[in-house]
Length: 152
Length: 141
Image 1 (spheres, rainbow over the protein chains, first blue to last red):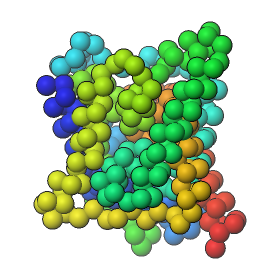
Image 2 (image 1 turned 90 degrees about the vertical axis):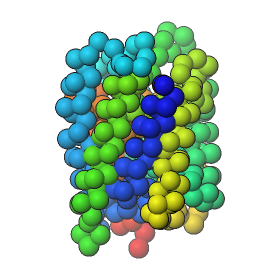
Image 3 (image 1 turned 30 degrees about the vertical axis):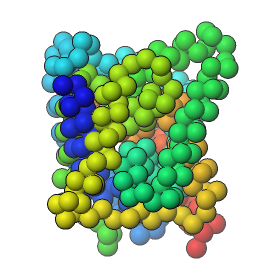
Image 4 (image 1 turned 120 degrees about the horizontal axis):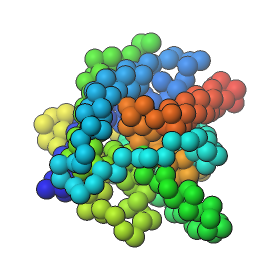
C-alpha cells in the first residue's frame, strides 16, 4: 500500500509539474529573469501549491501518525545553520544556470533527452560527492548535521 | 509578460500541493525530490521502495499524459555540456548540503511555516535570480 500511495503521489506531482509548464527549463528561467521578459507563472505555481498544502499540512500535523506508515518523518530541525545557507546558494546558482531543479530534471528523463540524462548523472554525482565530503569530516560535526537530514 | 500562463500554473501548482499533502498524510514523508532521490543514492537504510515508487510516478506522469494526447514539450537545454554538468553538480551538492530543494523547502517547508525552509527558499531564489541576471544581462546578449 505504501508503494502504491508513493507511486500515486509521484504521478500527481509529475502531472502538476507538467500542466504548470515547469518541466520546461526555459519557462523556469523566464521566471528567474526578472530583468528580462519576466514570466510570473512560477510564482502562481508556488502560491497555488501553498494554498493547498498549508491547510493540508495543518491537518497532517494534528494527526499522530500517517495512515500507511509507523511514524511521521516530519522534520524537527528549526535553526538556520551554515550548511543550509551555503547549500541553498550553490543550489540556486545551479538552478539559475540551466533552469532545472531535481523534480523537473527527473521527470524529463521520460523524454530521453541526452542533455537531461547528463544533467541527472551530474546531479547524482554532486549528491554522492556531498556524501563523501560529509563522511570525511569529524564525527561530531557529522552527527550534528545528520539530525536535520529529513528536511526536504 | 507575453508568456504568462496563470490558469495552467494554478492548476499545476494545486496538484503539486495536493501531492505533498497526500504523501505526508499517507506515508508521513516530505515530498522533497532531492531528499527522496538523494536518500536512494546514499542511504543504506530507509524506505527505498517508497522512494523508487515516487520517482517512478514522476517519470511515468508525462508518459501517461502522452497516451492521453497531452504531449510533453522537449526540454530546451543549453548547448554547452560543461554548463550542463556544472549546473547538475551544483544542484546535487547544494540540495544535499542544504537539505532540500524547490519541493522540500520551497513547498513542503514553507507550507509547514518552517523558518529554516523559508530562509532556504529566499536564499536559493535570490541566488538563482542573480545567476540569470549575470549570465543573461552582464555576460550574455
